[in-house]
Structure formats: structure tokens, C-alpha cells
Image 1 (cartoon, rainbow, N blue to C red):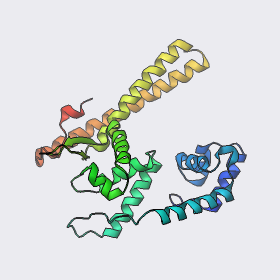
Image 2: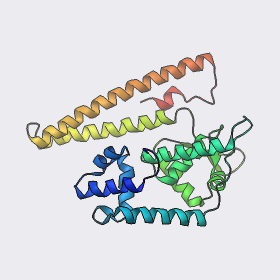
Image 3: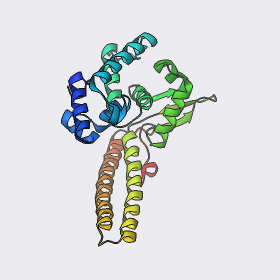
Length: 254
């Protein structure tokens, strides 16, 4: 089933695709899976030249048994006093984490982001993340650094103390999109430069020129979407002023 665990039949089809010289993206489309899922499956089970379906399936089952024996049961997810079903919250957190991994986030980074995302406050300290996820402080530090670089969280000093806490808010994906736009700008400029150096009439130059044009369209579209969202935030703020929950226009200006 797309989105679930890989079956032995899935692995047989992966092995067949590799034997036929198909790429990860092509195999992923055949299985209805992200290319990143296929890449991780093949990489951890011998690589493109050494992948075997039956061996990979047995190795995955063995790893699952080892994890089950080695790890303590996951702590209950705090669900506040809103009448939430703790089991439903836990199941959703796991599925949301898996989705973030499929989108390209490292496993631990996805766990940290999901843990923050489900809290009503959207803020936790490193110690709280360590306690909830039952991982080392170093793992939390690496994940937080990555998320901060991507604009997916911010940090602030805990009042009256030396500790920091990490925060997400309603603008998490707006900031992430802004980072993507800035990256696109750099790629567009490099592609334009590549076209000029290689010659716009040559095959390689045409390729770079085409890339620059596409990236320009993407940047324009994302810019319009962000502006629409800013206008929506401004209208919402005017109706229900809440200075602590909305990021200012200047902070998100591009």
C-alpha cells in the first residue's frame, strides 16, 4: 500500500527495476513511492549492485526486531486538557513524522519538528525534547541546528534563566518558502551565468537557459503566494489583534 511499509513484493519490483537499469525516481513512480524511499531502501541493503529483495526483506525484519527489543516504549504524547485521544495523537504524530521523512527531512529532524508541531505552545526546551523523544542532547542539537537553518524554527532565551527553548508558529512554512525562493534566486543566477559562459546557442547553454527561465517562473509564483498569505495575515490581525502570534511584515519581507 502506498505510504505504508515496503512489502516483499515491493522489494521484488525494486530489484527488477534495478536490474533493468531504472533510476530511483522511475522505480518510485511504479510503486507509488517517493524516490527518497527507494534510495534509502537500496542504500541500506547493499546498494544498486548488491541489492537482493529477499535478503533486504529479511534484514528489515531483523532490524525491526532489534529496535523493538532495544528501545523502551515511546512515552505518551502530552495532549493537554482538550479531551484529545492520546492514542490518536500518538498515531498522528508518527504518521506526520513519516510524511516529513518522505519529504526529505532526516529521521531525527522530522521527529523534533513533529514533536514541536503538536504542542499547543509550539515551544519546548532541549531538555523537554530529550525527555519526550528519549534521545541524546546531541541528537536534539543537530536536529535543531538543521531546522533553524531551514527557517523552520526559531530559538529564544527562557525568561529568568540561561536555557533556550525552540519555537514554531503559524509562519513556519512561509519562512521555509522564503528560504526556497532565496535558493531559487541563487540557482537562477548561476544558470543564467552558465548559459552565457557555455553559449546560449549550444545544447549545454540552452539547458542552462531553460533552467533559468523555469526557476524564474517558480520564484515569481512563490512570491505571489507569499504576498497573498501576508495580506491574509494582515486582515486576520486587524480582526483579531494578537501581536505575540503573528510575525511582522518586516520580518518576512522579501
